[in-house]
Length: 267
Image (cartoon, rainbow, N blue to C red):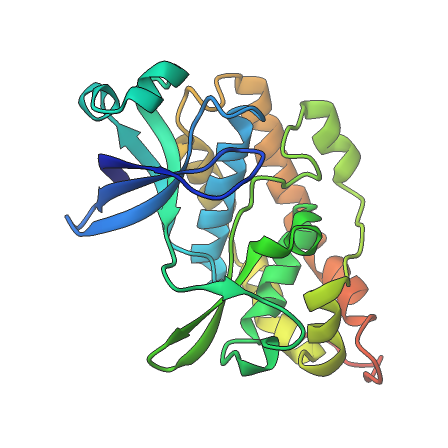
């Protein structure tokens, strides 16, 4: 969790109109955060989607920037004419750490990354939760030079469940479906860098998530983001159902890898 200290200003473009804040994390460290406000035009469910990604990022050790709920106080809002005029309310919003110095991933620079194998986990996550936006929006994969080399980061998980906004009926429709995405960087990674074995540890990590952990995640969603108990239960059931389909999802993805051994199995 974060606590906003100072509003910096808007950042880039996007359906959720992200904003930059200076904030403190749970350890009292100062961070610049990209914040999606609860009153964004897609609605507060995109914050639920972002929080879901943070939790799966922790469970699977994915290359998502650290993030979580960020509390914005009336005092911080009161110091900004822009936020006051926009009618932003105090309370819980979603923030993740801003990756200073990062650039966009292309087919010309992806080879530099030292953590390409982590993208197997990101792809698995995107296909479990129907995120078409990772390659549709070319700004959702970043690369940054760090001490141990260039590193890939996957950002912006607001468009899970295909649109970001979702209903109980929509979750039921998506439970047994998959839409394969092998465009742009995903196609390059599948063709040249990833093997079925890179996916196995992520599949096992998903299978190891316990029902109690799913329930604990649902309980951490701020009430104002998802007040309907029926929707909370539907999301919980969706998580459990997709966990049961993770091997099937993995096989759909690995079938896109050229020249693989079709007899390869998970042990």
